[in-house]
View 1 (cartoon, rainbow, N blue to C red):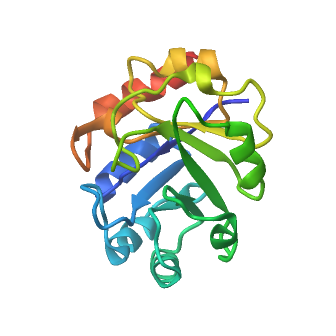
View 2 (view 1 turned 180 degrees about the vertical axis):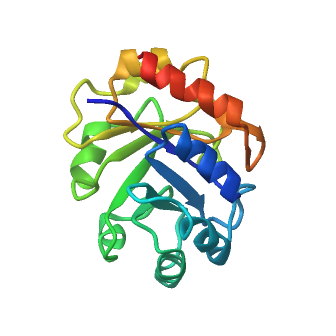
Length: 205
């Protein structure tokens, strides 16, 4: 099975199309207003409405209220929700769209316990922990902290880039990988050459 790829932090249509043409399976829109990669739902819809079929559109949230999730999913026509904060399983389950739960990995975490708690999630996205930063750190966490067998699909994130993606996939064998800052020219602006190199790394793994 090939590893799926999500390119996150999309703010421009040309970046979305570059990622898709190079093989991305999903694109992510960040709906956390404090992010440098934030996009408003109307702009996200303008992008999502023009992308070809069979590409998943993902909304990324950090401790949102219910109204904000409902508004953004309705306007942007999202396929999947991604929660990066302290959202409970009950919160995540209340929406008609399926969800994945991001976990910022620390040394004292029991990831198997998290997997059991969020067993209704379509997958666990493992990201790098940094204080006051729910994602997009550009740093890799210690992959040795990942259990050998998680009972839900594993999505690897955190500091992935064209230089380390092949090694990451060979070592971890995730269901999917999620990249944002590792393929950027500047924050919120993607670099097509970096996306190409990243996708080549995925294929070579």
